[in-house]
Length: 367
Image (tube, rainbow, N blue to C red; front, side):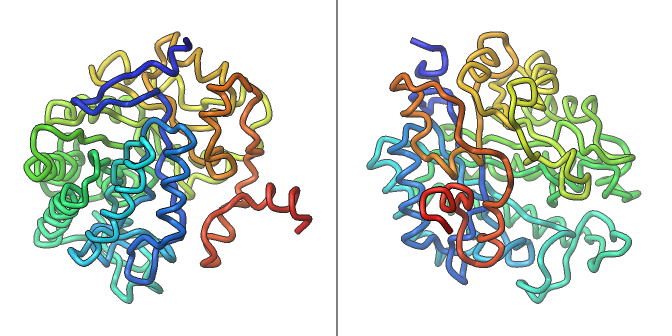
């Protein structure tokens, strides 16, 4: 049996294989942020398709942190009931699911929230203001309360979104964080809010459920977060109770070449573009490392684990086209994922239609 299909555990959470569905903004929640039947079905399909661990699309922890249309929310107790239905659907199909908790910070969508965006510092050319200490405390509490809702809804754990230029990523990055108080300056200052958020979440979820984090290995921006600082931040956060680290990188501001979802991955040598960074995390942090970023081939995924680059293989776009990809590979069909990495899948989500593989639909329905 391939190492990819070994049963493993993260803080007592048993996973049937090493495949992770990386958080994907689906654009399938309702106006309040509650999962629709369409989204619940999608989560269930991923579980039936063999994914070992499903991470939800980033759920905003407070209204001001919403970043996209029909984004999943976890900012209100009113949402717990529908979130619980989504979790039950996944569990009924043998899957495991954690809630990704996020806040878009200075890049939040004013046109959706009607609220002034906030971040560690003002950002030239964008609306928004630097956060006060009262704002910071309010955001910290928002993450903790969101984690409590996740527990109440039955999620198997939570993941903190600290990547891709969203709020916690902004605090960690000297590109965004120009503060001169205790939350800025040195790495110890820039990681402080992440530490406080982690502590608050751990208090709410208790000792039994895993707390994961997704972090940029680098921002790929001049003056942005470096791999050295990112790994050091990871070491600090593990001491605070983080159980696994998903390694990603880049953001939209970095341009197409350095986005997390890069274009046109056609060959094996183009896959796993954060693998060397993940190996550095593996050397230092002492907890499981989850690698995301352009993985399309079973053979590549297997080598990444066997050769010590990562413990888990995380994918996003391939599961948009093939929710059943893991089962296909397990059944012996080892052709690479059918995803062609054209990023057209984000267009219908932006238009409010929900995410789907545009290319696959064109091929099968002639659209």
